[in-house]
Length: 120
Image (cartoon, rainbow, N blue to C red; front, side, top):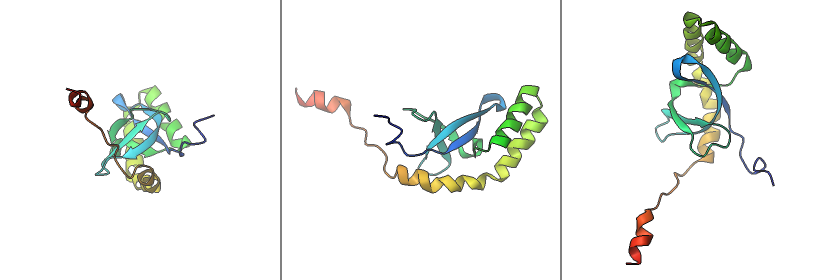
């Protein structure tokens, strides 16, 4: 049985990675303060946390423009494109509600030593 049936749809995003390279990943959830986004592959067990200003809603045309500017080494164009995306980043709110509803509670992390210590 496929996990895709049970897995909620995660929004695809553009991430500004090290050196400005654009990368497509999936937004898994926001942190409690909604200042960072956890992103990774669709089935990542440990997505990474990035500042909200480095994560943008996926648009195929914008991603192609960013990728081309990065490949050409056109830093000015790359910076301008990211600034444009940043000004429009309020559209992140379009998937903010969906991510919040998927992860309303933080997972509880138990103390692994407590069960070992109780036997002594």
